[in-house]
Structure formats: structure tokens, C-alpha cells
Image 1 (tube, helix red, strand yellow):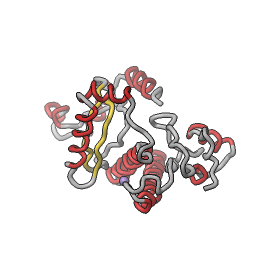
Image 2 (cartoon, helix red, strand yellow):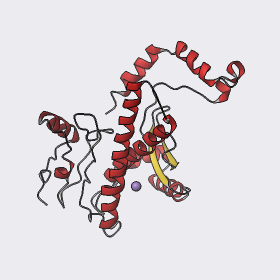
Image 3 (cartoon, protein in one colour):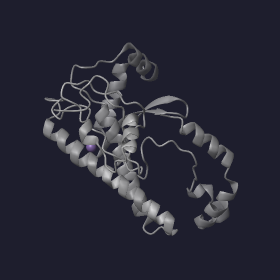
Image 4 (cartoon, helix red, strand yellow):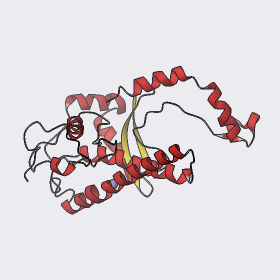
Length: 255
Ligand code: MN
């Protein structure tokens, strides 16, 4: 395949975004970034580095290897459908939900907000997790765990073998659709294995909490009973904006 990424130093996504912006392009150049067959899997330049155009809309991260590169373990047709159709569906759904939210804020009205929050979570979680999932794979035999990875996993889980056994068990036991996920938890600086059943449960994986409002009844019922709206109105009067700023600054340094 003729490709701009067939050389040894593929254009990073950050560079891609900059180059696309400079060129004044209103569309994504993802197809031209398709990795050439046999080229090494590119290393992501950042944890949360995904293609975005000048309007801030998400692009489809290109598959970092050929569709058939994972054969015979994962077949080319599955990869094509999974990446080009399913992943693309999450991408367009996420961009649509973000656009709707922008429209709502401009109007100062939030019709069907629960539906659109669910769309934002479902598609945002799907987009984020698929970005990680496709980057997490490479042709069989091309990589192996380093001593450093072994040590980190052994420190956290006893051994890499124990980690893999728990990860496999958790993934196998997911009820219905979902994911097995190894994650790093900034609170406590701990690695955790999580089952994600229904990733659309109103969260987006990889989000770092900045400002959190507890709306469980135990947080307000003694004083406000069923008047959750009054509690929320008054909660804004006690928000620590200095803390919000500190958390924003720390989180936005994560790359
Ligand atoms: Mn999928």
C-alpha cells in the first residue's frame, strides 16, 4: 500500500493535527495514515492523543497495522468491520452528541438531556476504549513483555501470570457486552483490573474527575428531602473554585 507512514518515523498524531490545521483542511486525513503492511506498529505519542480537526471533532484513529496482520488469531474481515464500521460509528456518535450539547448550551435549554448524556457516554466510552484496544494489539510474535513490564505487573498483582489469569477471568465473566480493562487509578496510584459491563453507563473511560457532585439521597435528604434541584442550586454556593482550578491544571498536564 502506498502510504505516507511507510517510513521509519511515522507522523505522530499531534503533528498530524498541527499539519492538518496548517493546511486548513476541513476533513480528516486518516486514510492516508493507514500503516503500510509490515511496518512497525507506531507508538502513540500520548495516552489521550487522538486525531481531531480544526473544529475539535474527533477523527478515526487509523489501524496501526494491516487488516490481516493479526491472522490467524483475529481475521481480516472482523478487523475491517470492527475498525471501519463499529469504531467509526462510535466516532460519529460522539461528535454528534458533542454538537448537540453545544447547541443546547447556546440555547440555554436542555431537552432530552438524559438521552444525549447517554449518547455522549456510550459513544465517548466506545471511542476511547477502541482507541486503546486497537493500539494494544500487534502481529503475533512481534512483541513480548519486557522485564520492566513484568516487574510492574508483579508488584501490583504478584506476577504477570497472576495478572493475566485475573484479567482473563474477569473478561470471561462479563455479563453480556463489555470489556476487561487494566487501568491505572490516580487515587492511591494503583493498577486495577475492572470489568466494564455496558460501557455506556453514563461514563467515559479515561476521564479524570475534576468536579464531582454527589446526588445520592444520603448527600441531601435530611435537609432537602425530595428537592434535589434546590440542593444542586445551593451546592454551587459552596464549590471550592481554587480546588477546581488546581485539579484542572494537574489533569490537563496528563498527555
Ligand atoms: Mn468493539
